[in-house]
Image: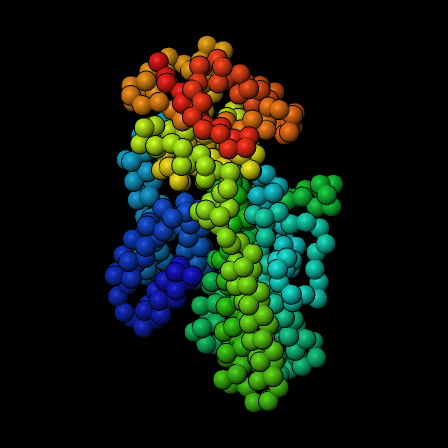
Length: 454
């Protein structure tokens, strides 16, 4: 929404002949800072603003006549990317260890399925006229909402049965500055939508696939492998969601201001009710269904509580979970997915003790670090360089051990399809004996050990 507001402000100021420098500078700073909240915002905002200025300046040759506006578009599109990358290169001392070409690009679950635009979320009570029946993956979820969808249905009905009046309204609205801006925004949002379906789109359960030459990633991926880092391309449809909803809202506002038929107020009231119901359902879900937070609510940590009370966190340097898990190195052979109850216990313990975890569930972590940490469970113990680092700290490691994974209660090792991952899970069973760990505390099948690394 910040980008849309910024583009609208630039458009209005340009139309009014006012300077753009401060607005562009402020947006560059904002876009750069926002990228560190979530790095996907960086290409998402760049693609939206770049497409907007391209649609605005290229067709009429305006870029030749107004070089300052062209420069403003180039700066707003490219400078946040340059600044963010420079900052990352300066502060990330592991940059050279990261993969240039990560796995997962064009992974089906991370691309937008167009039917997702019509599939309501499970907690919403309003049903649209057409709803997909197949499961939509989480990353592909992009429901446009009842307000926008039924608003478009209303426009379609008006076009079919009241075409002369609708055509007249459409032409009159098309002469306004707001509709001209919405047209440019729509083109920019459409570019994002085309990118969000991936460079290959499957039809009929994979019987056919379409090579999407209209996706900007089709060309970016050819220019640089680094474009693959933004592999969850479904997220690039977010501007399209906002465009459709704003399109219906702005069009409805124009009709209410200029129309004469009383039915417009009834239709507007109906759409407002639909928007309210969707909003109510969403707020109810997030305020009731996702609380209490099991990571911070002590009442949900009955197994971990006795362990926390039994240790002095300041005496340890880190927490090592057993069985081990490591997600995010971008190397499938080095990936060991976590088991949710186990990783939840380790997160709770880490938050309560303020100790870092030696396991990991993030993304873009250097594969070399994953290889090094896996050596902890080798028969000979940690690699010499890792052992030296752990010993140099001067404090022992707190080992969190879940016996349920080794007494037959939970066959995590048997569920592994990757033989390397299975071997790593199984190597946890003899770890306390092999490394001569000292038992510190027990709670049910959970145990804490002290590991004095030498």
